[in-house]
Amino acid sequence: MLTTILATIVVLGVLILVHELGHFWAAKSVDIEVPRFSIGIGPKAVGFQHGETEYVLSWLPLGGYVRMAGMEEEEALEGIEGESVDEEREPSPRDFDAKPLWARTLVISAGVIMNFLFAVVTYAAISAVWGVSPEPDAAIGDVQEEYVPEGAFELSAVEPGTPIESLNGEPMGSWRDLRIALLTSEDSTVTFGLAGGRNLEIPMPATDSARQVLLQAMQPAAGVGTTIERVMEGSPADSAGIRSGDRIVEVAGSPVEEWTDLSQGVERRPGQEVSVVVERGGERVQLTVVPRVNVRAAGGDTLRFGRIGVAPRIGLDRLGPVQAAGYGMQETWRWTSFTVSWLGGLFTGAVSTESLGGPVAIGQLSGEAARAGVRSLLSFMALLSINLAILNLLPIPVLDGGHLVFLTIEGIRGEPVSAEQRVRWTQAGVVVVAALMIFVIINDILRIVG
Image (cartoon, rainbow, N blue to C red):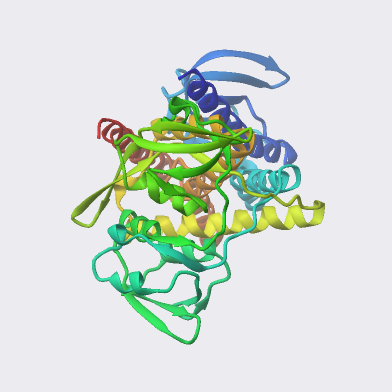
């Protein structure tokens, strides 16, 4: 629990700081007065004054803000900070609204830009310090029939190791390419282009959870060994005495040669006692593990599968500075494209709103990532930073995207949206964001209670 709390504070604190520093530095660069820089929202907890700016920590750690002089929309947020905005102040050349359109656009965009840059730099650092694992080829190593969705049973007849050369005509280079293409496809059917010129057409599940089940049914021909790299703290494997460095050689009486053998052995036995034999220090040790029950909905069915909380040891290749920078940009672009497609799926119904997570889900994932190691925590922070950037670009007044809509309208018609209209729209945006926050928190609670 302590690890989860600390990890959540670090993750949210760093990402909020990065975002707000973007706004702050951009405002200073174009000589806008900044009376307050806050991490958190609501009444001030602690703070100090330096120059013209008061730097504070506020009580609600669900965001932050940079209060800029002369930004009329702040009237809509009176009471959120626990203070009212001074309405009697004289206009100043250093006011936000007194600056040219390009300068205001830069200031509003800077937070999102910083979030994207954080992701690029973080992914680059991961690849340079720890290295990156080689991507499995887009080839089917095995098909678990119990997870194959209705209408896709022809997958079971595919010969193990068969390369998937394309999906709906698009070339597939790696398993990750295939995974993202399946999760973001808007087609009702997909056609696998298999080696040898054979095509296999299957219906595409409509929901995100059902697509995850389809991917779970198809195991990549990865050739990953069975040596344990990480054991998650508090996991079934941890409780059973499995250690980092152990090599799994047998599960439930069956020999284990590749990681897929191990994952299938535990997935098929949720909540059951499973005999596991590990090789440790040249000796074989027999242990008993009870895989944690995981539940996933697929259409009208509910699938139960087991997890024990271990990660394999995979060879990592460290990249040089130029390659690392390219990798950082590639990963950021890849996850940006995926997140945008996922958001599109929310509006079309392809992605269930049940998959939305709030602060509780972020806390849980932060804790899991922290227990998995620094590399996993940084990777999670980079991905979350991308998500926060994209969410901030939604055209909802009070978010950066809403402000950019106002500025776009001003650029088109040559005069700004009136302060009264901006205030009214911003107040409406506060209501929308608050409703969304309540919804995702309810989602989090329902997910916890099952």
